[in-house]
Amino acid sequence: MFKGICVAFAGLLGLAALSSSAVADGITGEVGAGLSYQPHDPTGSRYETTTVPYFDLDWGNVNLGTDDGLTWSALQTNGFSAGPYVNYLQGRTANGSLRGLDDVSSRAEVGGFIQY
Image (cartoon, helix red, strand yellow):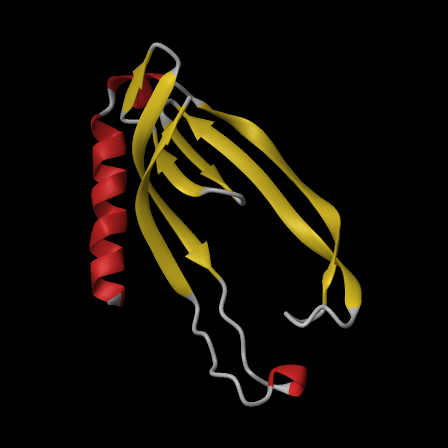
């Protein structure tokens, strides 16, 4: 599965390189850090405050950010945008209050998007 994810990721980067506006534009965006008040575990019985990174970088039609992962707006017309994306989803271990549940491994999510 990891090999398939790498192939999809490489393909997305290859398509981005073919985009004329992606090649013509420089990288712009924002980088920073923040605080997050979130559940300590999925049961929500305890909360914690942690630091979280934030970045949202644009390179022509390609975007890399902490929220959406790597996206490429392959089609942009009349306010609509569509294209593929790749995102990383962090796993968890089933210990503590989650004992008895299965562990969930980290994974990549590959798909497409349409937005207006």
